[in-house]
Image 1 (cartoon, rainbow, N blue to C red):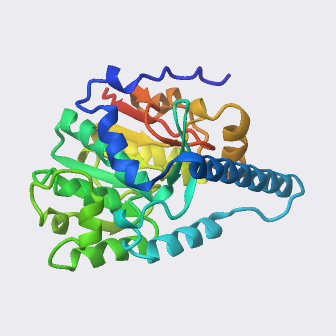
Image 2 (cartoon, rainbow, N blue to C red):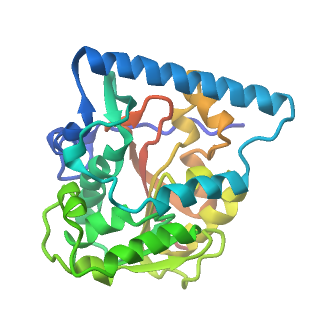
Image 3 (spheres, rainbow, N blue to C red):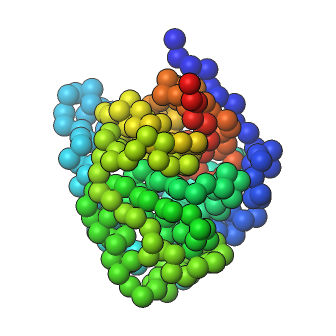
Length: 310
């Protein structure tokens, strides 16, 4: 029997010091508005739907689909491009179909990390952790955004893809954050050199090289979505190394039950675990919200869970 969907809470009802204006200000430079935005939204949504249908047909016919090697190749290419793409001045170069509740947003996907930074920062500010781990940190954009705002925190990132770690470490090799990247980060900078102290490691989420309870907070951002094949191992490891809380922004089954979102998640073989299912790994959901911009074709709520100790 499937778990019942976990209730989602509006942003203003969460115990966080953040409002809609902070998120909106972060993504506005990448928003295509007006009639051009409406046309771009419809076009991208239709394109995504066609591709999802084609992938499902291939799966039913037993043809080769997106496997582990294809996923790693996609990410190697994305992370290998470096951080130059995070350019606020460039505006919405590739507007795609996003939604914020009932609002349709033609938003360039490059805005994603920028609009999520205030959310992550609000949770960290509330929990006040001393040691934080990001599992599946990619090219380190989230950690590079957070470190200067919280210079007293020890941040660690781990990713399976060498290209992502190399891109993050290339930024650290500089004397300061590249100007484009510094402009992209929407958080106030308390220490401009804190990014150099982030620890970046290559490794698998299924075998994290850390001690039990080593981190006060472990978080993921659209990383476990790619780990359906090793879901249980990855979640067990995330829970093991957490000594307090786990924060996940992932396409939980709860928000992808019907329509285009279900089709898209299935066609990409994305993570299909439920929020309540975190309990199997000793993680008790505290709250969940999807009250921020989401890709229209995939629901990825932000979920905070508490480590349950015996």
